[in-house]
Image (cartoon, rainbow, N blue to C red; front, side):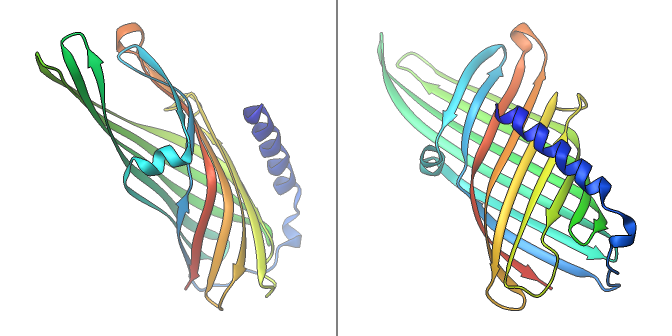
Length: 253
């Protein structure tokens, strides 16, 4: 249901942006304007994953992720001049978990480490004072290490996968009119079989200025990735929806 709703919403947003006449556009400034926003994502993850044909169900709440989080970094940077601009969005999480379980010959100790990154790079084309076209690509990377210690042996397994997704989206936002409150919503689709079979994102935010150059931002982010390669014993699949509330600080230069 979420996937169908997001696709309908994206179609409506694309249609709305395309319908805005060029004559309604306000003149854009010639100076570079840079925006930096570090943020925190209270992420939960749900879906399925498979490594070497072995499929598992993923159902991790935000508290599960935070309790196993070793390191995390997230941020958005955008630079605009006139009707054009560039932007980048980075997410990196390092997760680690340990556990023990009884076995036929004694207790088994297991530890797992996983690094996950999503690095998006966009071009920006201003369509109107309230709409931007976004186009670019996301590099997705997963790295995992699993270690098992049993009374009889020690075993470990490592794996990594990196792939590239073309993406296109629309960002709608309140015009810059000097008011303290502002809002925006970003939607995108991508993959198209180049990397992922399909990927989509919906990211609404609302913010309040605390000074001329700084604001506090609140939002909610949905990012869905459906990627697979190989089959049977070589199957690798990552079909996971990551979602959660966002809080960040935006600085304008």
